[in-house]
Image 1 (spheres, rainbow, N blue to C red):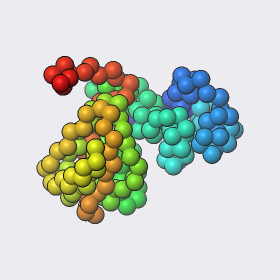
Image 2 (cartoon, one colour):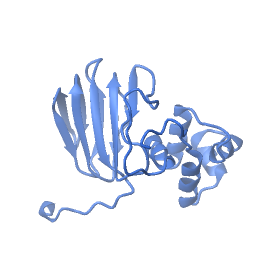
Image 3 (spheres, one colour):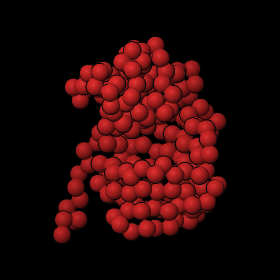
Image 4 (cartoon, rainbow, N blue to C red):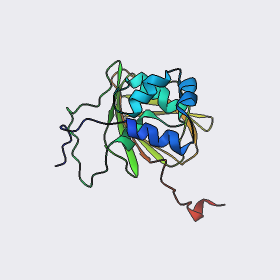
Length: 191
C-alpha cells in the first residue's frame, strides 16, 4: 500500500548510480568526502547505512544533496501516505522531515525549529517556501527578506539564496521542482 514502514530506505544504489553517472571512482569520492573507500563500498553494497552527516559528506562529494540521494533511493509510487509520526525526522535543535518519498518531479520538506545551515543554495529549478509558524530571514539576489507566518517566497531556478529560522519554534515548508527535471523557460520572462 502507500505506507512504506515495512521497507527500509536503501540509499547505496542511489550513491552508486550517481557516482557512475559522474564517472568517479570510489577513491575520488573518498578523497572528496573524507570517508574511507571500504566504508563507501559497504554503503554502495547496502552493507553499511551512513549516518546523516556521512550521507551529507557523500552527497557533497557527488555534487548533490542528501535529500536527492534519499529521494532516488526509494522507488517511485503513484500514491504514498507519509504519516506525521513516520521516521525520517532528523533530531536536534532543528528537525527536517521529508514530505514526499521517492524520486519524483518535486521535493517537499518541512523544517522545524532553529534551522540555520549557513550554506548558500542554488537550485536548478523553481522553489517555494511557505512559513507555517514563526519567522525566517532569507537572503536572495543581494536582498534580505523577513517572512512571517503565512508568508511565501518564490525563487526561480538558479537564484542563489540562504535562509535561517528567525524564531525558535519556526516551521517552514519548502517545495522544489527536482533537479533532474528539465524545466521549460517561460517565454514571457525573456524581456
